[in-house]
Length: 186
Length: 186
Image 1 (tube, rainbow over the protein chains, first blue to last red):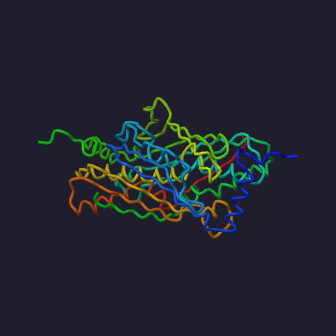
Image 2: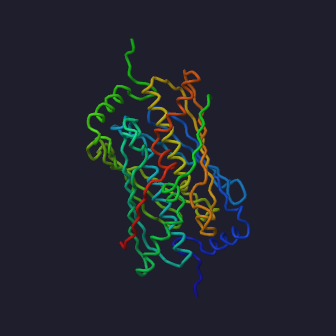
Image 3: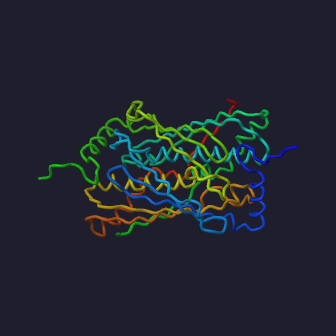
């Protein structure tokens, strides 16, 4: 008899309970995530992340904020005090795809023993620099390669790839998201 | 006489030299950024970032990799061992918009003394959970609010907002980027 409900480190009983709660009250699925950024100097700036709203309440689980530094490498006039924003975006995508595969595989009873990935993003800085209007400022193409280990057959291996369609950041990057920006005087 | 070429912490002489080099040889603007991720347990995974290709060569300026941990908060079955992927994406957007304003303002001679921002992203987890096909998995709307300080007039304040159109991550989030994903057996 199976005495644990934990698959891939995910508490599947709690996951199923979450799904039931959300099914009964879809408003519980509404989340608002946040970040605050402060420019320091040149390409160096710092983000703090702490609170968010979700599951019907303001979250209070974090006593200290997460602090993330961004900078550029010397070739882009920075001092390597942190990854640059493009690298953070690729990281967010890889992390989300990984979490998505792990959670959804757990819900389907597919046990993983390892999941590694590499992500590459191509960008042409003529867009950022405003040198060629036909070149977009953003990534032109992103490729993600996963290596999975575990007790699964080839059909389940194919299923793991399909599960990435549930990824929030895959959708955010693949499809348009409205971004509203305002700049006012402090 | 102006004896320094540094505006907003950006070496404007080097920035202009970079633009001249890229104008003469557009292939120098082609960059490939990268990240590698390893799943640890449950919602916890870890990214390392080090090398990239750009300006016609493989970069060797970083002796140690940047290491970034991702996790979920308890309400999403994690242990808060890091920000989640959605928060990292909002951070990447804020950091890129900030750097974009700072660099382009420097090139135009607009001196800033401060630039703070907050970013909020709305998401409905019915999409991630696969409970409602009409709900997208990704962010539905993102709002960014900047507070700028410095010696600039109202026309230049409006110009700062327009400069965000050069942001690589704004474009990446606002417009579709092709994402190719493969999952193979390790």
